[in-house]
Image 1: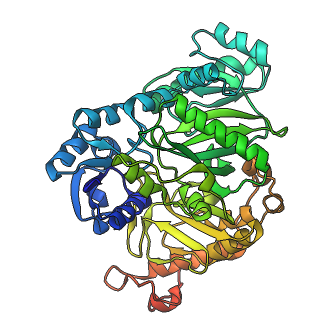
Image 2: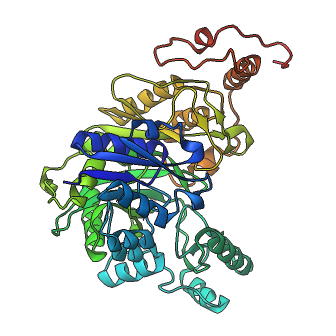
Length: 497
């Protein structure tokens, strides 16, 4: 078993990894940028090391410094979490060359699945259904025009490397093609350092369904069923659930077995996710492999009863999977809502600042994976995710209602968050019906405005904060029953409330 792990990440996922390590008796080392020194994961780790200034390139993306730090503190392994270096094959290779265990797949597997065109080629040769489109990077506009003539419009221009919607453009007709190619190349170059793009058929109103897979170094592979991740904003998932209301048992089994074939074809080990698009006729197509632990992994844990981060560490330690496919089953329904430090009233712009008061929801079937606390500072330098609220219930409707109540009891004062927006999504009649497609937000929430009571609460919170001076403000504890009682004396004068 690995004895010491360096966590090359931050925020809630770093906290999650630390907790899994502690349960296994593994010592943890947190690395942090200068601005992150007071952060929760730094406090929870057995050791912590400052690795640079806030810009990611000077800290969390500094591969050589992270590996040098791991050697210096005697860490046998590095867990990359998600984001930053988690899917970087060069970093995995540097770990291999330094004889440090990378808690994830090999650099060879990362290179294959990280290149969407190469992955499409491999899956096509293996007989895995892929979305119709290019099997090679597009060169001149003639290459793109030849494919559009075959598959028809609309089509999707995509970056060959990377993800998160960067370099992605929907093209509805021939007139838009040239501009979309040029814009896609510019954005791909800026985001990933590579302007390679390709084109595939745009599947209208699909569902985004992914399968969680575990694979050890002895050829054993299991899937842990699906997660539906169709509620997305700007190609980023914001609400995930399992099981998917769209799948029958027969379709679920077929997709799960196909996901295992994908992992085998890629010679992939550790935890990974095989992503599919499911159209209205129940046809499904391979989309990509996410070669890391996913943000939404807790909903699988709650319905299957398997600690996925623990499994990552066991596999990385060279242990065989103790799980057998026929022994894995789902129970109940789980939904996750991602809580972001964003301002929904201003086009979801980041909302950095100090969290003056935090009250996390509690109760049966409620779990919060969080990297924040009362008094902590949310910086503008990194992804604005604060925490994940996960609920479980015997049925989807119970889980949905439980999530609404938990969100309504989630108090974060000092910054704006997406909590109110998430409540309205989950209360929407189409969500209640399970009509969750990837265009759900644009189709149903395009004219969304916050309710008056949410706006009033935000204004009151702002008045409280502004009425206090640094010498009188205090950080309150989780035992408090009301933010208004705990923040002391305050007044609203002069703020136009």
